[in-house]
Structures are given as C-alpha cells and as structure tokens.
Amino acid sequence: ERVCGCPFLCGLRYAFTHGPWYVLCFPLLPGGTLQVQLDERTSHLGGLPIAEVRWIGAQLVLSLTAMHDLDLLHRDIKPSNLMLRRNGYLVLCDLGLCADLAAKAPTTKTGTRGYWAPECIERAPQDFAADWWSVGVVLWYA
Image (cartoon, rainbow, N blue to C red; front, side, top):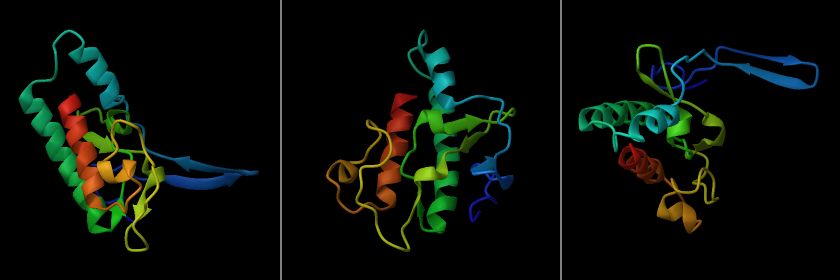
C-alpha cells in the first residue's frame, strides 16, 4: 500500500476475502514479462540493444528508489518479476518477499538463485545493496 504511487511499481487495486481465501487484485499488464521478451528477442540477436538495456536500468532505478525511500527491500528482482505495460514501460511486481528494513535487516536466503547478492548467499544482514546487485544481474542478462 505504501508504494502504490510509483508508476514503476505494481499497485494493489482491490483486496477482499471470499470464504477462507484472501483475494488480491492487481492491474492488468498485457505486455507480459521481461523474461518472455528476453527469451523471444535475444535467442537470435545475442542480447538487447544497449539503449534498451539502459532504458530498463533507468526504470529499475526509479522503482527501487521509490521502494528504498520507504525502507523496503524487494529481495526478488529478476526478469520474470518485471511486467510490461502496453506502452512498453516496466512495472516491478511480486512484492511478496519484501522486507521492511526499518524493522530489521533480513538474513534469510530469499529470492531466486542466480540473482542473490553475496550477502544473501552468506546469510549476512542484507540492505539495499542486495537489490542493486540483482539489478546488475538483470541488466547483464539483458
């Protein structure tokens, strides 16, 4: 709820219960994931054009800055958690593993192997640097 004002973060539209279930409704993002785009476009090209990788990076910087300003650590940044709007803008999704750094720095191995920062692997206290490490992996992958 605290991060819904940023256009590069997936905001919750509605939440309700239906019997024993909690239902969360998010906006429709018809562009699919960055992972699908990378799989389709890089298999024969060898990677995205550098200008496009920079554009992805700029949007990730804006989304993470909004989260980090609220002391929130995403902890699972990867291409399949980056959805595309119809206009091509990225939206960082899957905030389910977020940690509130104002409460306590996490030390658990959470997220996706291959995108973990060294401190995650070592189960050391994590801070914003762990998210930035994952951004670097995403940009290298693109």
